[in-house]
Amino acid sequence: MEEMLENVKEYVIDEYVEDDTEITYDTPLITGGIVDSFSMVSLKRFLENKYEISIPDDKATPEAFDSINKICALVKEYMG
Image (cartoon, one colour):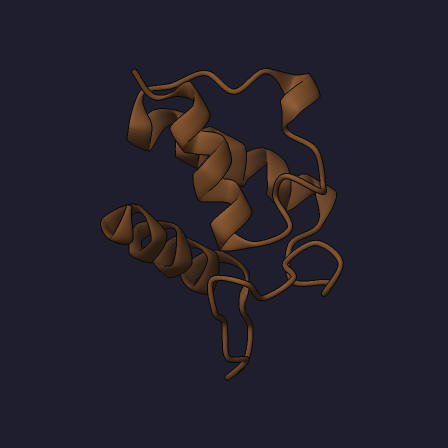
């Protein structure tokens, strides 16, 4: 799980953080304005490709993508 947390955190920082904003596993990504709805789609695609899973669209909600901890919990739900 630790490796997954770090991988997702690194991706979020590389793709969506434009300044020196400190990101933790609990930082609000959607409600904090770091990730928008368009970015959420690319983040979902990244997760599906990296972890060879399929996340149903109805489960890829802003709530489920609002922190790195929540994202990793969602990914674990769909891993074999």
